[in-house]
Each structure stands twice: as structure tokens, then as C-alpha cells.
Image (cartoon, rainbow, N blue to C red; front, side, top):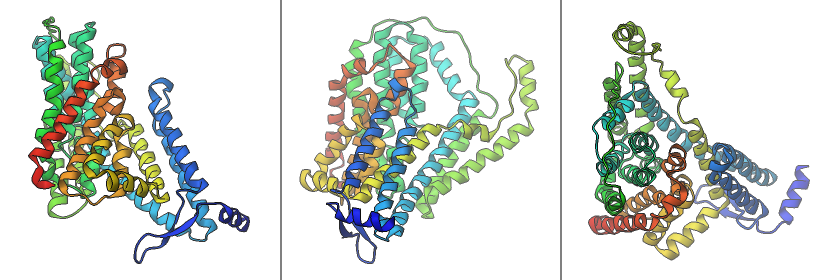
Length: 466
């Protein structure tokens, strides 16, 4: 059977050997082979299902995981027929190791966010905002500013959901306010995530890959502010000049909430220190930081009787002892598995040779600046994770300023459409009927103005990095 397969493959067009570099094993150029075309078709079909998740309710991880397996199986079949299977194994292991580092990093961050939700940190912030009786215009700016500054530490999805809950609690049936406030939150959360390694998966990928050092990301702070403020300033005039009734509900944080916030910040410091001073992968620092939460969780469980005493003086509901592993179980596993499918699928297409062709077309012919601006536009249509992973796999020879530019555009480009970022997709579900694809699309020209302005500010302000 192997001999028959070998003959059939050798008779097909588009198969040639290519060297990956001195001392490395030879690879096959499959870009014009039926396996290459089939792999592209599989990835495109999988991504159509991802983009249609809102309508099909099929979780986005399922099609890309299947696509990843099929693409690498097709590649392996060709290499096995040429008796060079270990080349594929080594390439796939490399992609899987990259995924594992990012997955564990994100898992720790998600666990801390879930722990803070459990301690009602975000509920307390929401109730405080609602109680204050801000006008719609004040709330529009306040939720936007908070989204901008919370998303660099928490992820932009959690931040957007929190701020949207405030908007819905106050805005009620005022569709115009809810719609504009949600657009503003999406733009602000994505912009805030662009100048911090912890703000978005794409910035985390760039940092862990070593393309940009931790402190260098903050050169994007002012361009990110411009990206948020320009559209917000224009949308401000569309907000109704109304002051809604305040809500008197008071939500208190549970015991240990402030200490968990402190431990999360300490975990971030640990990850940065491990990477900057000890030259260890940041994920090692994050996993070390998870132990802080585990030890504190042990303390909370051993002293859970204090929660029972507080319950007797007014707290409502049964006391459930704090359990770190419950918080891990509540992580966004669909997102983490989706990330696996994307990394392995794009890695497979890169191994086939398509990313080298794309790099030649985009970066060699268009030039780095135009190519990086195009990356941001692409991330509004296709999720920014595969786009950024593709750029990192291409690894074009660019100065620091260009790597910061592509980090900025990939982070904020998703704001151009409601489906362009996880924050936008989530808010369409949370504010269903009030914040929609078309309500966002109506303001896309204004958001695009902020996108262009942020790029121009970066090119001017950080010109010495190019």
C-alpha cells in the first residue's frame, strides 16, 4: 500500500524538494500540490463555520480542531510516502510547544479572573457605577475609560462584558445609548489591550516570541489612546442628554478579594521578572504565580467559618468554600481549544509553504508598513489570532517600530467590525437586539478614522524605532 501511495503522489504535479536551511532536513514544496489545495480548502471551510458561530451555535473550537488534524494528516501522508516522516513530527512538535506555552499562560490569567469574579470584584465595581447616577454621556466616557485601563491587565473580553453589564443596567431600553456605548466599549477594550503584553492574545504572542520586549509595548500607549478617543469624541454627540434613575443596590466584595487582586499583580511581576532577568519563558512565571493563588485558596478553605459568620450578619445564600480547581474548570476552554486549532492549522499551512508565499507578496512587494496596516484590516474579517500567528511564522525582517505597528493594527483592527474581536462578538450576544452587526457597521467609518489616526501617531511619535 505504501508503494502504491508513493507512486500516485510522485505522479501528481507540484511536488518538489526544498531546503529549510543549512543543517536542517529537506522539506517538500506542496503549495501547488493537491494536498496543499485541499488543506487551504479545509482551513477556509473551518473558518466559515467559525464566523457563522453566532447563527449556527456551533462552538468555534470544533471546526478548527478538526481542520488542524486533517491538514497535518494529509501532510504526514505525503512525507511518509517519501520515507521522511520525522520532519513533519518535528515541525508539529514545535507548533504544539508554542501553543502549550501560550495556553498555560492564558489558563493562569483566566483562573485569576474567575477567582476575582467568584469574590465579586466585578459585581462590586458594576454596582458602584450604577449607584452613582451618572448621565448617559458621563457613563459613555466612564465605561470606555475603564475598559481602556482594565483590559491591559484583564483580557479585553472580560472587560467588555463587565462594562456592558453596567450599560445594560443603566441604559435599559434606550437602544441608541446601549448601541453607542457598546461600540465604544469594544473599541476601548481592544485599544487598551494593544499596549500591554497581557491585554490581548496577539500581544502576548509577540512578547513570548521575543519580537518586542515587555517595556517596549508601552510605546503604543499614546497611539492606543488616539485609537479610542477619536471615535469616542465623535460618537459623544450621538449620546442622548439624559440622566437615568440611580439604582440603590449595594454589592460587597467577598473575603479575600483584595488579596487575590494583589496576588494577580504579583503574578504578572513574577512572569515579567522571570523573562527579563532570568531569561525564562514568561509562562514559568505565570505558573509560579498560580501557586500563590493555590496557597491562598487553601487558607480561604481552612478559614471558611469566617464566611459563615459574615453570612449570619446579612449575606445571602449558601457559602461555597473557595476551590482553585473550580476556577480552572471555568476557564474559557472553547477559546483555548480554538487557539490550539488555529495555531496548528496555520502552522500546517506554513509548513506547506503558503506563509512564505504570503510573506513574499505582502512584505517584499507591498513593504512592511502597508503590509502591517493590511494585517489590521484582515483581522476585522478573520480573527486576529491566526493573522498574527501567520505573521510570526513568516517572521519578516522588520525593525522594532514595524513589530509594534503590526501589534497595534492586529489589536485594534478588530474594532472595525463587530465580528472582528471576541469583545464585539460577546457583546452582540449580551446586548442582543440593541448592539448588532449593522449598528456597529454604521459607525465603522468613524472607527476607521481612529484606526488611521493611531497609525499616523505611531509612525510620527516612534519614528526613531523604524
